[in-house]
Amino acid sequence: MILPKVRDPRFITIRRGGTLTDADHHLLALWAAECAEHVLGLFEAVRPDDPRPRQAVEGARAWTRGELKMMEARAAGGHAMGAARDLSGAARFAAYAAGQAGAVAHVAAHQLGAAAYAIKAVRAAAPAGEAEAAGRAECRWQRGRLPEEIRELVLDDQRLRNEICWSVFEV
Image (tube, rainbow, N blue to C red; front, side, top):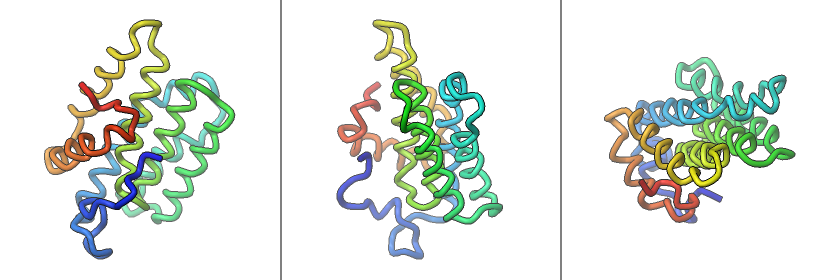
């Protein structure tokens, strides 16, 4: 599980007693969708006829635009996770990244799961001996896409949860 035992109030919306604004929640969802989409081809190369991970990524974006309810985005994330179950390696991790992106609408802290699984997917797809370098490059790519408004929040979250996220955020 990539979620902490104690929820960080910075990833709980203000209306639920935390400090996260709706605008920042949406930015987290968009960033998670971008991280997942960056590796989606690793899944689609194996299962080109399975739309569930792409639908989860699109659902996360639709939720930020108010076109999809939170429960629908979360359900799409769950379906993407289901697409991963009988797979292994890069394809599995890419589908999990998409599932995590879809779940951000429900729990903002899933944003880090989308990023971590994307890094795992890139590592798994890398040629022998190049996995660590590929993972570091993916992490740098992701960090380069972070909107300034949430940059410090996400970087701090990566530092705090790196260990439970397979230490993928060590660059």
